[in-house]
Image 1 (spheres, helix red, strand yellow):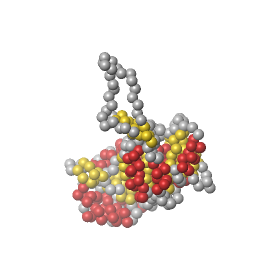
Image 2 (cartoon, helix red, strand yellow):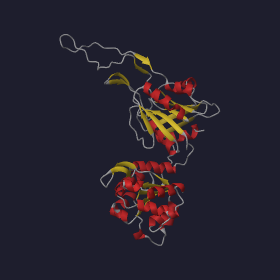
Image 3 (cartoon, one colour):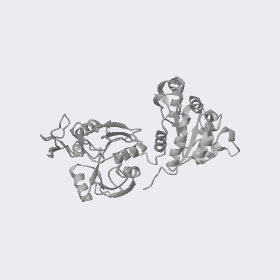
Image 4 (tube, one colour):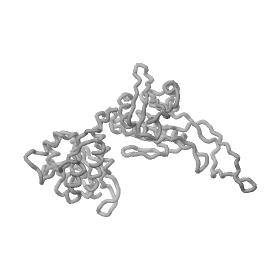
Length: 403
């Protein structure tokens, strides 16, 4: 499976803000992702991060005004780069870029850029909210520069507010969203269910399954890379939810209610959750105690839990969905994989189903890889098999299920 993220060329500009201390971690993440990076360091940025540190991590010489030579690096570097990223970007540099000032190597590189530009401001909250800063951001946005608003939290000046630069892993995700070779889901709304459900027996015990939510999260991330707005209705699992709205649920009934509430919003519904087929018929509000015999010895008697069927969420959505909504289901099977998947495709009124053998090695629950067979309802479309990392598979799936 092709990994479109590997080998990308990232030109990274660092300005003189305290958030520059985070950038070595970003450089390591870029390298780990298989990408190349060239770094432009402003003179004031050297007060916050050492050039030797960045050279060691990137494996390349750092560019700055100090070593500006006859090779005209602001032109040469832009000819090389797939994207120009400025992180952190101070209010001063933001203003210079907005007004076309090119008085150092980094601002000269911005003027010469013919690749996408991605800016991560970092400053005091009052500086960020200042009308001049906000006007400068509007100018850049109107030019097609992508400016990612800082997050809220503790600032170096000792107050808490909106001004913190995004974390390195979030910056990398934004870089990949900018570099995505496909943008066919821009302005589309994607609703995804992910993870297991917990069907409680009593307050401390439940029936569940090993789903990690990784495939649903991968479908969400791949759609977000392609420009979509994404909501995930998630069972009790954790994953990197940056860029998504996450609606947390526990039981199948809670998940069904959340899906119905958000159904009208969605253009695509992806049912990747491993929803419990059954729930306990008589939930005990108190913990069920182990019984003891009259002589104080352990009682070997068993107790019985009676189960009743949960609603089939995908089938419910299949009845309610609009004509122009696309419903994509998953079939986690252990035998007769294709036959069972086709039966579900027809019965639940799905547009596509993705079938896999969850008992096969490297496939199914709680692993980073998968093997899936895409089966479309439209018989004029071909079936397709995907195998590899879940996020790479998910990106390919969106090529085949998008209208």
